[in-house]
Amino acid sequence: MTPWFETQPIHILHLEDSVIDHQIVVHALKKQGLACTVNRVESLPAFEQLTRSTRFDLILADYRLPGFTAIDAWNALQQQEQQPPFVLLSGAIGEAAAVDAIRLGFSDYLLKDDINKLAHVIARAIEVREIRQAKERADKDLAASERRLAELAEHLQSSIEQERAAIAREVHDDIGGSLAAVKLDLAWLARHHKDAPTAAHIGSALEMLQHALGASQRIMMDLRPPILDQGLSAAVQWLAQSFQKRTGISTTFHATHEKIHTNKAIQLVAYRTAQEALTNISKHAECSAVSIELTDGEGVLTLEVTDNGRGIQKNQLDKPKAFGLRGLHERAKTVQGWLDISNRGGVGTSIILSVPLPSETADPANGNSP
Image (cartoon, rainbow, N blue to C red; front, side, top):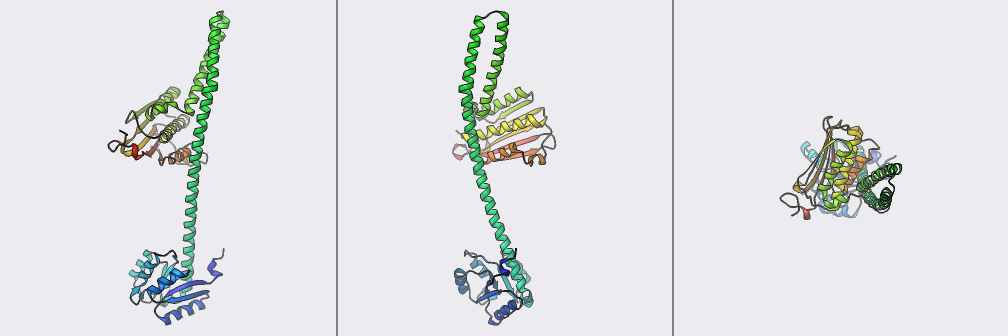
C-alpha cells in the first residue's frame, strides 16, 4: 500500500528564527521532490497558538531559538491533543543534546549540513509515527476484544452454573423421586413375596436401584454441590475424600481454617477449579498421591492441587483443544483471580488458584473474617 504522504502534500510547521534557513529548507524539499506546505514560526507563543489551531503532519525545529529551545517547544506540544512527529534540524547541536532529545521522544534529528537527506528523514518520521499509531489502535482493539471475551466467558460460566442448578433440581425432584418410589414398591414386593426366585430378582433389582440412586446423588453433587452451603473447606475436603474413594489415589487435604469466609462466587470458582484439577489428574497424571492446600492468608485465597505424576508439558497447555485448563484461567478471571500451572521437573504438576479476598470480609490479622 502506497503511504498517504506520497500522494498528498505534507503540512509542516517549521520552528526557525532565520528566514534564510527557512527558505533553504523549502527549496531543498522542493528539489528533493517532497510535496509539502511549510509554515514558519519563530516564537514559542506563536508556536503554541498555531499548533492548537492548525493540524500539522510534522514539526521541524531548530534547536536553539531566541529565548527558548526545541525542548521547550516539545514540552509545550505534550500539553496538546495534536502530537505530530518532531524532527530537529540544527547546525549547532551536540551529540549529547541530540541523544537527550531522542530519549524524550523526538522522531529524529539532522544537521543542516546534511539537508539533502531532509525529505527522507521527514518521510521516515511520518511512516514510523503511522506504524506506531496503527499498533496503538491494534492494541486498543485487542484489549477491547479481550474484555468482550472475558465478559462472554463470565456470562457463559454463569449460564452454565444456572443450567447445572436447574438440571440438579430436575434430577433430585423427578429422577430421585421416581427412584425413591420404585424402591418403596420393591420393598413392598419383598415383604409379600418370600419365594426364593422372586426374592432373588427383587434383591437384584434393589441393588441396581441403589446403584442408580448413588449415581443420581453423585450427578447432583457434581452439578450443584449443596455441600458448599457448609463452607468451602468442607466442600473441597469432600471432593478430596470422594476422589480418593473413587480412584484409590492417596489424597490429602489441608486448610488453614475450618471456615473460610468469602462470597459464593469465589467459593464456586475455587470448588470448580479443584474439581477440574482432580478430573485431569484422574485422566492424565498417572500418579499415586495428590495433595490439596487451601489457605486464606494476607487477604488472598489460595488453592493448590499438586500430584506426583508424569507432569504436564508446555505443548499440552497450548493445545487448541485444551479447553478444561483454559476454562480454569477464564473462570479465575471472573473473580479477579489468576491461575498458575507448573510442571515440577517431570515429577508432577501443581495447579495454583489465587483470588484476592474482598476487603470487607478479610481480617487484617489473618485474612479471615471475624
